[in-house]
Image 1: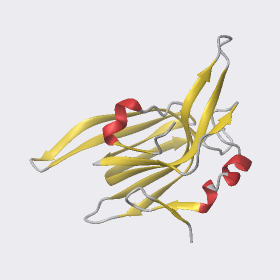
Image 2: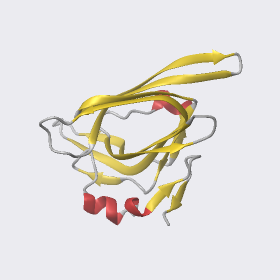
Image 3: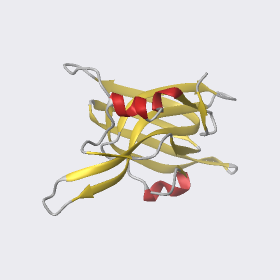
Image 4: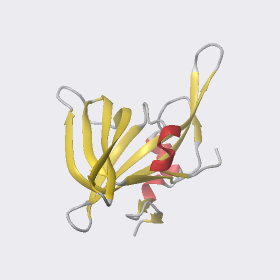
Length: 165
């Protein structure tokens, strides 16, 4: 995979099924809007053999939604151990508030635990923080995330990665 970043223009080419979310950050912006930043293991490629067993190319990534409003978070860990969230799918629909503003209504639906995050936003940037790693799992282990430097980077509100600190 040569591409390292995407925007809402690439939405139809992307899939987040079974991607693990290790954390999220809400940042205040201007005029009551802000940013929603998800720290995830992005599955860049599913490699499935004739025996139907799959391996995966996985990279740590930041998925940054811009101009977020009307944020609603509902996640139920009842009777479950705390751990990463597994995305089932991300949906969007076009919303128009004025002649000059067209945005999207987003829903991030989780496989496990049960829940969703929904909001309005103008779009997103997704940036890989390291090269994809070949893995028998749909996620990176803590050791793989640390080795990739994923824990040592942060993200700027415009979606660019920057060293933490």
